[in-house]
Length: 119
Image (cartoon, rainbow, N blue to C red; front, side):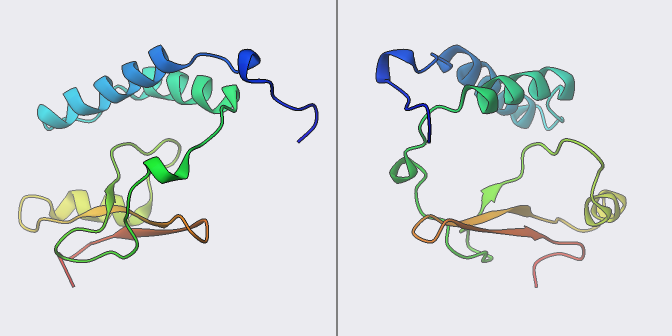
């Protein structure tokens, strides 16, 4: 990319990243949704910083499976997907999972959402 990013010019977003992490983890612990307006602001700050991404820190999540393999969907911004609306209606009866499986070697992501429980 041009102009090149010099290491000393990369913005420090560690405080925003830590705040977003805490916002999501605290909401999950309380079984609540994260505060979306604050999360959206933090996400925008992090995305606009365009800091280098170290894919080796992502870990392995190559396939959705009943035993794991997903990064949990903790927050969705924008219009709620139809599958998520339907899954919420069934939440008292059926436990659904949602997340993303990443193949870091190819740079691909697969979104995964259950509506009637694990397939």
